Image 1 (cartoon, rainbow, N blue to C red):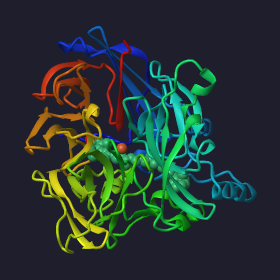
Image 2 (image 1 turned 30 degrees about the vertical axis):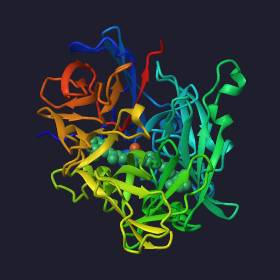
Image 3 (image 1 turned 90 degrees about the vertical axis):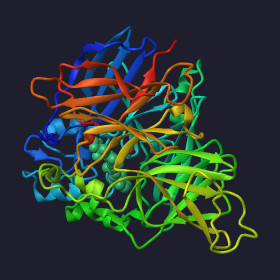
Image 4 (image 1 turned 120 degrees about the horizontal axis):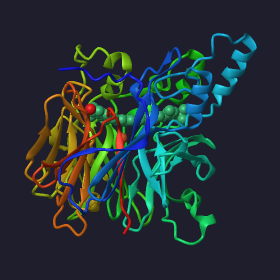
Length: 521
Ligand SMILES: CC1=C(/C=C/C(C)=C/C=C/C(C)=C/C=C/C=C(C)/C=C/C=C(C)/C=C/C2=C(C)C[C@@H](O)CC2(C)C)C(C)(C)CCC1
Ligand SMILES: [Fe+2]
C-alpha cells in the first residue's frame, strides 16, 4: 500500500468547490462540518520536527439542500504571518524549538534569548474547533485561541485566555451543555507560588447586548481549582470528563518539568522533551462536584497511564462511570515526529491505545472492609478496591483495543450511553478503518475500503430522532487509489452502512478534530 506523506505542505482551497455526490443525502442533514489540523510543515529551508506542530489548515464541508460544498483555508495567525514574512520557522511549537537566524550577530542572539525566557507563545491553533458563546475558535493548547468565520474560514481576532484567567495551558476539548454554556479546564504554572488546575464555565451569550457578548470569555466563571500534586511538575492532560453532577480530571504521571522548560530554549531542545512519564507513580483521579466545586470525600487511584481523549462519563446507582482511551507510555506522541513517520516501513513500536472503563463509587466507605471492591454494577468488571479509609484503587475494564479519536452522540454526553465511533489504530500512524463500538455487547462494526484512510468519525443526530444511534456518521476519507479523489462519507449510524459520499476534487489530507454546526432553523 502507498504511504501517506505526513510532511507534505498542503494547498489551501479557499474558493468553495461543489463535491461530486454519489447516493442520497438525508434531507435533514443541513449544516457545516468544520475540521482542523496541521497543514504546512516547512517554510523556506526550515521544517517542523513534529506533525502536531504544522501550521493550521481548516476545512469545511457544508451540507445544504442536497449538495456538499468544500473549502479550506490556512489559519492566518501571528505565527503564520511571522513565519511567512521571515520565510522560515521563527515561532516555537511543542515539538520544534525555533532558533535565531543564521545572519544574527551576538547581541541580537542575546536579545532573542531573553525574549524566549519569558516567551510569547504560539497562536498556531491546529488542533480543534471549539465554541464559546456564539463564536467559533481554532484552538491548540496555549493561552491563545483564534476566532474564525465558520462560513468563509477567515481568521479573525486573537483571544488571550490570560486576559480573563491565569492559565498557561487550556485544553482544546471543552464540554458543552444544552443551554449553550461551555466548560473547559486549564493549568496555571507557578502563579503566585502555586501551580493549579482550574475548571471554568463560559456562559452562553444572550442576544442583545453586543458589547457584553464578544468575546464570551469576558463572562468566564471559575467553577473550581484543583491544587497540583507538585509545584514544578503539573500533569499534562488533553481532555476531561463531565456528567450532570461531576467533573472527572485525571492527574496522570505524565508531567511538564517546568525547570527543564525554563532552560529549553537556551539548551536548544523542544518543549516536548520537557515532558516526562513516570510509570512508577500512580494516576490520581479527581471527582469534582459541579455544584459545590469541591472534590468528593473519596480519593481514587489507578496505575500509571496516559490518556489524551475522554470518551464519555455518566452516573448510575451511586457510581460515576467514565470511559477513556489509555496508553501505557508516551509512544503516541513520539510516533508523530516527522522523521519517524517518514520511515513508516519500520513499524514503530507503539503502545496500543485501549478504550477503558472506570467505575468510581461515590458513597462513603464506612463499614467497608479493606480489600473489598466497592463497585456494585453488574455490567462492568471495573473495580474499585478499598485500600484504606477514604482511598480506592481502581482497575478498569478494557472495552476495546486499538482505537482512538472517539466521538459519541453528544446528546448523550454525561448520560448513560452505549455507542462510540472511533478510528482503528493498528501498528501505523495511518488509520485504515473506522468503527462503531457497542459498549454494552462489545460488538464492533467496521467500515473500510481498499487504500482509503478515514478521519475522526463525527456523529450527527437526526432531529427528533429515536434512539442513540439514530443519525449519520461523517468521516473524510483520503483516497490513495490511482485516479480517484478523496471524499466525505456519510454512514447510517445504526447499520454503519454507506448512504452517500461526496468526492472532493481537491486532495483531502490528514487532520485532527472537527465540530459540526447544524443549520439554524
Ligand atoms: C507546554 C507549555 C507550553 C507550550 C505549549 C504548546 C506549544 C502546546 C501545544 C499543544 C498541542 C498542539 C497539542 C496537541 C495535542 C494533540 C494530540 C494529543 C493529538 C492526538 C492525536 C491522535 C490520538 C491522533 C491519532 C491519529 C490520527 C491523527 C490519524 C489517524 O489516521 C491515525 C490516528 C488515530 C493514530 C508553553 C505555553 C510554551 C509554556 C507552558 C507549558
Ligand atoms: Fe484531541
